[in-house]
Image (cartoon, rainbow, N blue to C red; front, side, top):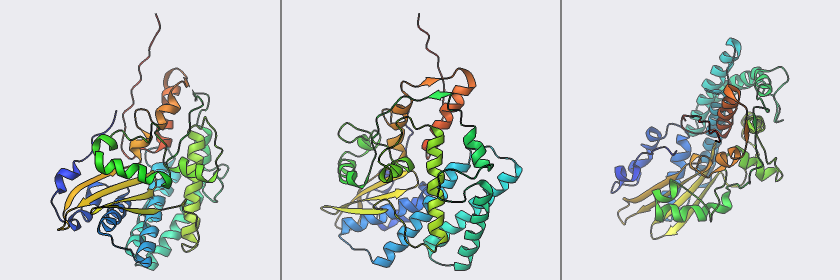
Length: 341
């Protein structure tokens, strides 16, 4: 069942394009930088404006820092039960990562950045993330959590794999702008509903992935990406493969523009149409969760035909699988047993 989303276009139709940028962080508490950058990039594309190289670099740096923070949030907050010592490390890494993201977006306070990086390194090591290898350190809290992912409680069927990428951008933004909510509430691309996010980014690097990837495999991929992003941050933000386009923008003619941002949970899209006075005529957005949790989407495909252990073991395994897809909103899960006559 889909969530309801804020009626952004009704709130901002007819308002100056510049009025929306500062409001977006209040509407989107998660991935707020990604939403800001996607909107600014879409507006610039609608106006036919270019972006200076240093501005683009600052935006990419802020996007990657936020991706790191959001991946940590999805990994630790509300997903894994820790003892007292580990909980302190989680608090430390989240606090320092939030400081780091603020520094990246504002481009100031280099001393604060060094302190945050040092604190993150210590906390990640305590939790078991010490390298870009997909497996956490033996004996660490994360290793213990992965060991408790009961693979026998949920036996997944081999699901069709389809992944969203930058090559799909125009096929997404054109109907998003013209069809609006009817497309964004149930997105699809020529009959397919691709997955986006960490697992899709891994597919870009490793074309052959297991067809029955469960929570443990998906969590390992997230841990590996967290480690890789931190290695880039710790190295002074040098070379890193950002899986193609971290930010892409598209002019769609007639003062229409669109942008795509590769954020923590996948590809985020914004489209905008402006009038001659630079006021908003139309604004639409499509977050990654709408793909992954669509009624015929990747999560549903993974669960259909799967074998579920009876009782709490099986139900906990389903919750763990949903968490490994990392929804950007809370969810309710109910179970109903169907018995044949």
